[in-house]
Length: 350
Image (cartoon, rainbow, N blue to C red; front, top):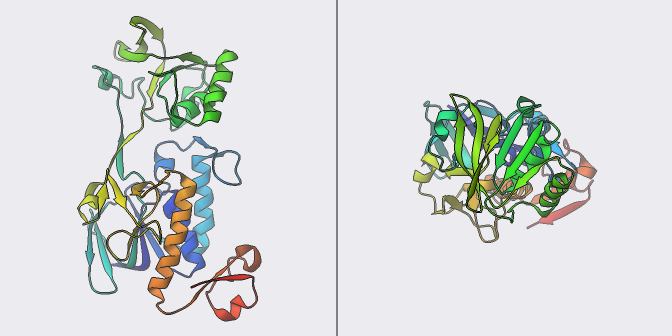
């Protein structure tokens, strides 16, 4: 049996950063994740994808961000149960929760933080009759290693941030990049839309809108696609077709834990600490929902920070929590004591 103060379900960026915030408060953490390595979607789906909205990083690859987060939390020695899925959650008594995985590993903790991202997920596939025949034979739903597409002709379909970002990134790697979207307007960041337009003007990206891919062509291996635009159809030769229409999230077993669910996400009280309808169980990151929710990594970092403060109060009832700035006290100086607080710039939280 594994025992800990805070059990975090999900080893994505939000879960990993929460270990750091908990460590500052001397809260012991253990993480469960269904994937065989930490990092969540960043590690599994797009480790080489550049991310542009992490404070202090004009651009950082997803995999590099995961590596940095792992380095940041190493000092707090969290435990990991990887390659296993959290299946059941039970309240043992007034103090302890019990979570058992699909492989029978028993975990007990005084607080639970669900940081499962989108939960279990699968790509949204376009409704093209024979597309499954070409999966991993020219049809790819994720870009794990951009070098796989070096000097190749690729067609990307989609109108969100992933389609825009990968079109921009791969324009310097692939021999030819074509971006197809069924509308003239894109859903992604304005800056990315402008970059795609600039690359189109430079002849580095072929932009076809409004249009849709209607057929996959090839004999066992992809060699082209059929596009329909304004009622007319035409073929494009390509080595790879990458439809990026997002992911279909599924909560899996977590959906049976008695949590309040809204549109496949867990409702939380964002006015306080991102706690669910079950006292002592929190949900942070993309898996939660509340009025004004934004599914951004940096928002998950904030939610994890607030959650850890609440857990500290839960584990230390009646004890005043003193927030100290790491710029003054460093990391080692965080022990929550008044004596140390007198030596630092502090802000008391009632």
